Amino acid sequence: MDHADVIDNTHAAVKWIQNFPRKPTMDRSRWLALLAWLQSHHGMNTNDILVEPRATAGGYGLFALRTCPPSSPLFAVPQSAMMNIKTLSPHYPSGLTAVQLISLHLMLNRPEQDQDSLDPLFGPYISILPRNFDFHPLMQLVKKANHSQELLDQLTPSSAQALEKLAARFSADFDAICRYLRNHPKIIQSSSRLEPRLGEIDSLRLEYVWSWLNVNTRCIFLQLKKARSDPDNLTLCPILDFANHTCQRPQIDVEPNKEKHENGAVFSVLSPRNMSVSADEEIFLTYGAHCNRNLFVEYGFVLHPLSESWDNCVVEVEVDDIVEELFRQKGSVGTWMMEILRTENYWRWVRISDDGHTLTSIARDWTIHSNSESIYPSFRLVTCLRLYNLLPCGSVPANGEESLQSWRRTVIGTQHEISTENEFAWKETLRKICCSIIHRAETWMKHSEQVGSDVMTLWKEELYVARYILKRIRNGEELL
Ligand SMILES: C[S@@+](CC[C@H](N)C(=O)[O-])C[C@H]1O[C@@H](n2cnc3c(N)ncnc32)[C@H](O)[C@@H]1O
Image 1 (cartoon, rainbow, N blue to C red):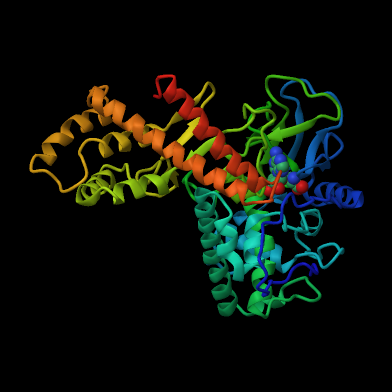
Image 2 (cartoon, rainbow, N blue to C red):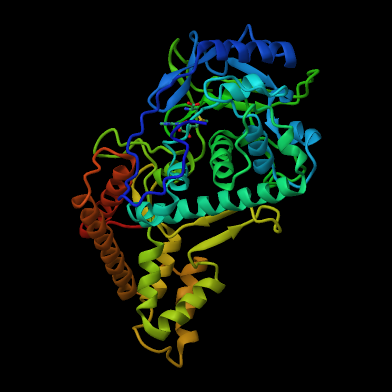
């Protein structure tokens, strides 16, 4: 176990570890061993691979070995070499989700110190995975469990909330693993580790958070189940998982094709469609249209602005906490309005299902965010602020239902606005929300010595977005 892998029980003041150095320490022999294993065990053609991992500021990244014209095949990984519910299920009793199963397998076969993994199934692949996740906020939260509130208090409120949710997801998976190991005690004995520290709950948690973060930061979507929305449709894929994220540059194409191969279908990775890649250039993937809050919480990094304009980032500020407080302060009419927003699916978050039954994702969308041209309040936020300004504080008037009709028409789009006064009023509320964001960001930044950090970037982003909207309101620009 890494010496740093202990839970901190001291009571000293804690801070986020800032700009944690991501020292790339991979021995090149591990890359060559991975290629040899992919060829010998999975029949992969490794002679034609056009990429290799090289050190970057964010750990390793994938780099082109030579000039690649658009859509060049970079490499193709057979499905038998991927770690997922299909390749692991035959080796374990049932009862775990894909995330739980893959992370259990990684934990049971985690390399000791600087050694290689002794896993007979995926050893050379596990050996090349990151050994250390100290840079990740969840790892810091788990290691400093006694100070979690102190750490959360340093984040923007929406990042803190997102991190708490991630921690709850981790804890639910960890509890499931503990139950599973109690029901199947022989599984621990199947570990390839010489000194598995898996008996005591705190060490088990630290081992599991390492493996869980490997899964959470490196898995990609692969349809393995009938329903596209099945949460078990994910996989770890060697080589591809060295690709870093971009939201701007052209990205590689991933094609899970059905080409016949003795080791199952092949997962082909092609260079970007619309441009050539030069030799020694880094090749990126887009993990999703993630804003910095999500990148920080899920992946442990943020995209820092290249200039004052933040053009290279998807900027987004979530204002749930401020808006909810506004409704709470509005008396019984506020409570009534909250109920209306809940029934109409405009309250804080919405469940989206693509087959009408399964919960696939939760969109939280009381936000101020960027699109390609400018920064806007989300339609859901405007809808909710229009309702907020429909009636004054106090109790619900007798004609409450009636006055809702014009609001409902703006929701379904048959009416452009409730009234000129209402338009003016919701923009005024938005102005006050922006002032609150600016006030809390400036207060935090004044009292913090953490300069240049990921956390500081989260705060600066809030400040930038709020100031931008204030300017637009002041200039009388359209906000929708
Ligand atoms: C799929 S892995 C990519 C390979 C990884 N960099 C490595 O060293 O193995 C995802 C992780 O890479 C890092 N990462 C990805 N994109 C990044 C970026 N644009 N800037 C900084 N770090 C990034 C984050 O730590 C993230 O959790």
